[in-house]
Image (spheres, rainbow, N blue to C red):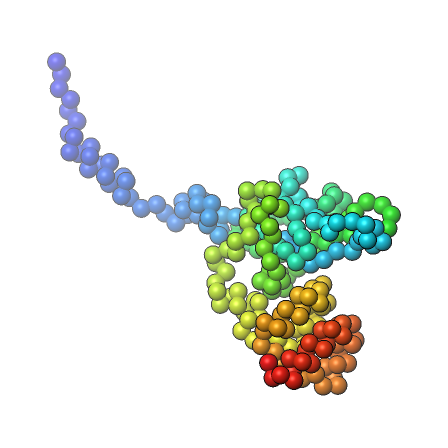
Length: 240
């Protein structure tokens, strides 16, 4: 009978050494799905819609967003969600393929897409996509509410803000580090936010409204509602 020449102590030492050997950072980035460099972050947000005459008879629409033919989810007015997608080419559209846009996503890239919905008096509903800048997109997302979980239809979709968005960065994007100005109110109105949302911002923010003739002229020119103007005047009078 032959005896094994393997040294058990040597085998154990090698096994432990292999287990303890470090994994390179490049290996971590390739294998870890949570690495910010291994996926692209595509934010979708919905500010409002144009229902036309038929809107009087319809329930509030929730436009559907698709990626490569798969339903990512639906968005209500004032909501957002984030799709964490693999880098490379993707076809994205809202409601119908007529609105398709081609994207070549980069690893770690951030993309912000405003979803719009229109129901004309005659014909089928239309969805459109509009790419916005990173600065504007972050501002919008930070001000909107996350989509309801029941409207999310794909495991790649979440409403959790990425870890690499620091608290200070979010605060800066949302404008929480500075008072609300007349220019801010006009920007919110022109971005499609309704009176209810703007009034909430006035109530819950520090403000710096002058409400002089120049401010009032700018507000009228931008077609800001009298309800919002009255709230701004009240906040200015209260020194809020």
